[in-house]
Image (cartoon, rainbow, N blue to C red; front, side):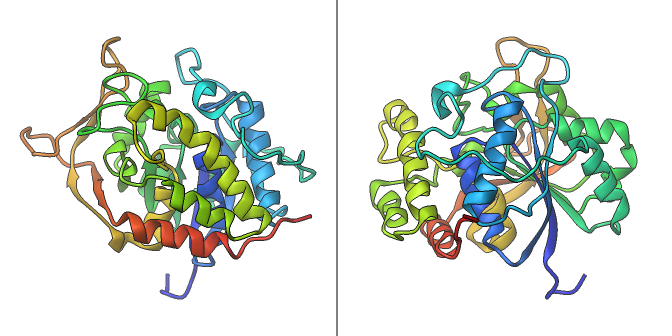
Length: 319
């Protein structure tokens, strides 16, 4: 792969306002070749995450983007959703039109497996913005993909910030901890964007108004998405704005130099009801467990929001 070639990625997502911003950032970035978008049940049930992904593709001016529906429930647990955060639709805030672009007939898990096997080893990056069910199912279906994946970049977990759905667990990992365990143990290179870094990416009022000031459909919709999304975390944390989680996955691919972290071991708690979904992150390397991921903790938040604003300003709706 030469430097000039775009990086091939698959985005696995459960939109979600912050997922929507991540999708738009990716579609606005010529450095990335999006092979497809796969959806999973998470923030809202699968029919809504699949609908929302297509709404965002059309808002961003990419109705040609293939979208594949995936798992509608965790591997072995009852689905937990987050309408209290994201609203009834998962994209409460702007009034986005019903999409006209088609949904692909292939299952998301088959698409992930086929894409990785059809490309050269080290070619495809998996960007996981929701529960890791689809990735785990793909690894179970074809274990050989683990050694062919260039990198898995995921938003999930937390150590210093604790959890956001229980005292111990972040939502994406909590929803399907068995899937997360499979992914973290698969042996592929993994980069983790935990709450420890996403809580440094706060959508302050000044930053939200900068999106609105773009005076484009994408700019206005982004501001309205964030207006709705941030209300929950502002009340919870007492902050000026809420953390913008998922776009960090995409920003890492574009400007990794604005982040800082270290290689550590992360294990997933699946047995305890008290700490279900906890990411047991050995930041201080006090165990003898080998490192299995690059765990990100630091962020230049102003450069992150500058990147978002610059890229989203280039997008125009399909209609």
